[in-house]
Length: 249
Ligand code: HPA
Image (cartoon, rainbow, N blue to C red; front, side):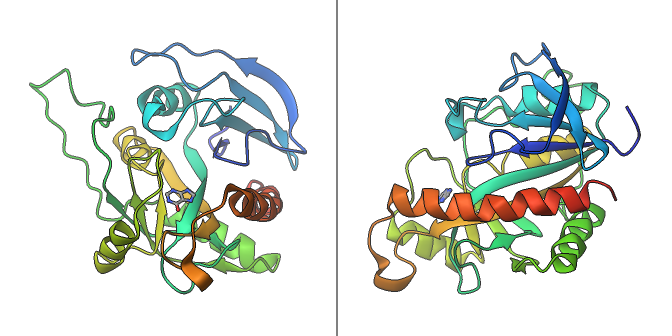
């Protein structure tokens, strides 16, 4: 595996990668239990990549039950250095309209009771990783430049609110997230990003706005799964195009 092999963690709407020539599947066992599935090794746009479906290949694992530690540990131990995390989100602020892509630059963690650190057992050696800039700027810029290069309509910054799920938020919760400075909301951004930092993986998120968050958007009615699926499927077409551009860099 080369220094530059990229891993893609696929979220809702991206449980497989079209165009990925699969070379092998690798079942990993970790000290933290089982990852969401085997790692899929393959070649995309002429470069080696590793793909992992965050919710399992049949999309059966809800956000609060994902074994984030096992997933990140497995990627690290497969020799990966860079991770692009794809995730469906709700849009809170005006720019975040469906089905845009967003490359967040900040995150606020509202999740609880998830296995959120690798530094839990060896308490003689407490490690506080720096997390001032939670996403790797080099990888974020690669996504930004890649999207610009192929004319994809994307928002190049934003603060991601990581909520517990699996239910969607109330209107008042979204109001609070906006007061906190959040632009988009999703259920899987943490602890994934922090765990990647703990293992020194370069990590950036490519979010697809699947819906207006609760109480936002025209009419501000209930969030329909039909709308979510339609936007996710449109957004993921752009994600696939983008990944094919970014991976060779
Ligand atoms: N809230 C939280 N997570 C989400 C949403 C949302 O509105 N849409 C897609 N993932």
